[in-house]
Amino acid sequence: MIYLFFAAATAFMFVAIAGNFVIPLLSYLKFGQTVRQDGPKRHLKKMGTPTMGGIMIIPAIIITAVIFSGINKASNLAVIAATGFGLVGFLDDYIKVVKKRSLGLRASQKILMQLALAIILTLYAYMIYPGDSQVYIPFFEKAVDLGLFYMPFNVFIILGVVNSVNLTDGLDGLVSGIMLIISFFYTLIGLFFGFHEILFFSAAISGATLGFLLYNHYPAKVFMGDTGSLGLGGALAFLALSTKTQFYLLFFGFILVVETLSVIIQVLYFRATGKRIFKMAPLHHHFELCGLSEVKVVLLFWIIALISCFIGYYIFNLSFS
Image (tube, rainbow, N blue to C red; front, side, top):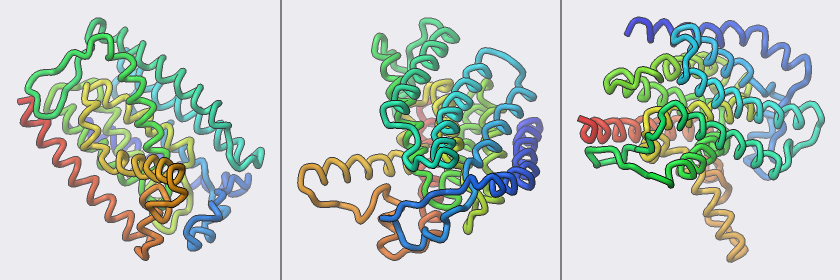
């Protein structure tokens, strides 16, 4: 267990130290955040805050995990997941902040890149665990074999997880804290239920996101951008695939699911009626426009994430043992 602490500490120090150099560099290069004009007015003061901070998080996770776990099939999968989606996010950020194209990659381009990566990850995972198409379902004592549905199911999960993390990244420290909580519970699962291949990776995520919170808590000195949110989404997808806990993301990623559903519901309802259910989607902006401060919304969502992870871990413990 002491090595897990060292892994988390290494990732933490990597980001904490890098921030002293990377943030001034991002400011110098004028890699600043653009803010939605239709969003909460208080967010307008964030205009120009350095973004693309994910270039600190993702390397810290990958380097730490490789140092402590070495090069193997599982770490290769983790590298593909985090780095691949992180690079898609980097390209999107680069187009936004350097090319000054506010929407970044076109939706079709982003979807095709993500789909290609999801398919590659699913195929590689199936190569690592040949013939194993089982997943754990809450309250079931034994894993369930999905058979032919396993591969398209995983592609769907990967795309859903990656984009849900991306959608949730909208307030100072929100995604950093949520991913810190989720990765901590995945470290417990790896430690106590024999999923040793994820241990150092999940510990590294915890350390890196905690280190990033030093600069990303309110008022944020830097944002992770799509580089960070998509990369962390890929990292979370790896954790779920490797532990076969895709269905448990309903608990571990409860806030991510709710945020994504709020966007889907808002869009579908508006198209059907021309009206909005929420004042603004994703849901965190709705709470802000209802009068809650940004700090209170973030703390509320962190608490909900912590409780839902406790519930998920408890159910997993009952089902697995």
